[in-house]
Image (cartoon, rainbow, N blue to C red; front, side, top):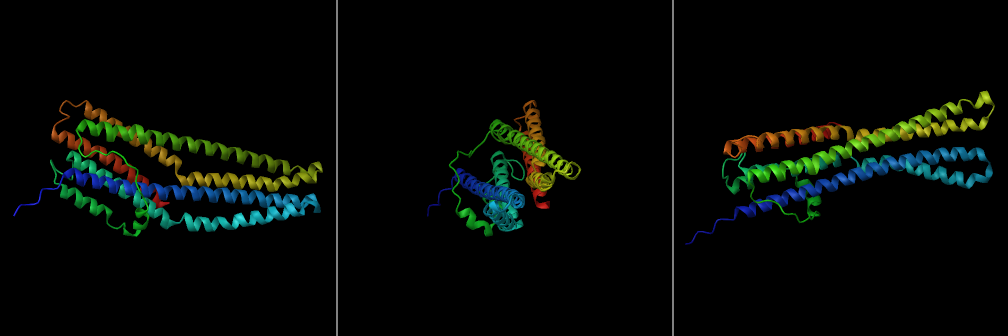
Length: 309
């Protein structure tokens, strides 16, 4: 009898990359849903507060505004009632946990594939494909409850390496993460936090001005100014909603973590390139291990931050 031909190792690597792409896309889908519904809830709450306050203001304008007052009051009440339901149904702890689990699996699969391709720990030189398969299966264990989501995902076609040289790893994996992900993500999160905090400050300043103006109603004998007190409360509510959104989205924390990880990876790459014996097997393995540990540490810090809060 003839023995069956040995399976092509590149096929196993390709399969592992597809698994990674599926869970990465699933995590992105979950994250997009969380971000969208959190924003919807914030906007609905803000609009509800505005409409409810407008209804109170229209009540002082006479019976000619009764229809508009009723419409504002009804719409405001409806929006404010929907906010808790949206948060409970679409931004629940279970959905947050599902997202972090899918993200963790995608990152762990990516790490183990790169370690396999370069023969870094826990693999050795020329590791057998069976070891890659086993470790990928271990990573995917416990994700069966997310199978319905993963089944709907069709990852975009993307060329992934089935073999890598140390220099390819330094350019594609390390420098690619630094310039293509960490630095842009750090900048995006930092700028978003700055803009939202600026808006929060402006609204808080407006609330203070409105409150102070409303306080002049009695001394000046201008009763109409007292209505500005309600709008001061609305501005305060909007500022609080923005502050809560910034805290919930962790913009500042993510900017700090992404930037420090980019600096760490760039330093590791430069140090490796400056090492004369950088192509020695032990040196390459140490370089890959240090880089993957840095990326893993960022992932763990990121996950711990979301899980804790």
